[in-house]
Length: 160
Image (cartoon, rainbow, N blue to C red; front, side, top):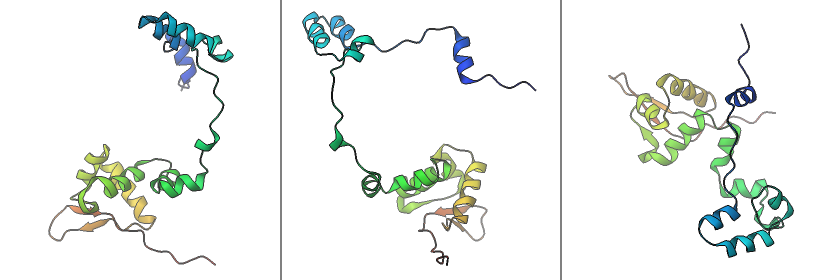
């Protein structure tokens, strides 16, 4: 079987030139302000002039950069996203934490609809989350549906 073409090969095969968004200068001219365009050109950095974007040369704002521990402290959901690499398990956890009342939905089908996934994928993701220690499924006696409710993960004994 032949290998599928790479994304680069597909892009080259399209034969369409890439278009850049209009630079500040052309936007100013289009809006009818040549004086503003001239001011933007005068204050542009050399790279901006080369790419016709006419952006000012700004030093990096080092105080705006935050270390990872600060980001995780102020955005606790990020750790789940990082560990699980943003897959369906993250969508399920965040949906149960933020999008449904009391962190609970009626069934796997309802959860699949909320996460924009198919039921089988949700079932496999729930299996994985339960292996990680999240007790999510609560079977309802006498019915085929299983209620899905978010509970904190069960504590595992420390290794050692």
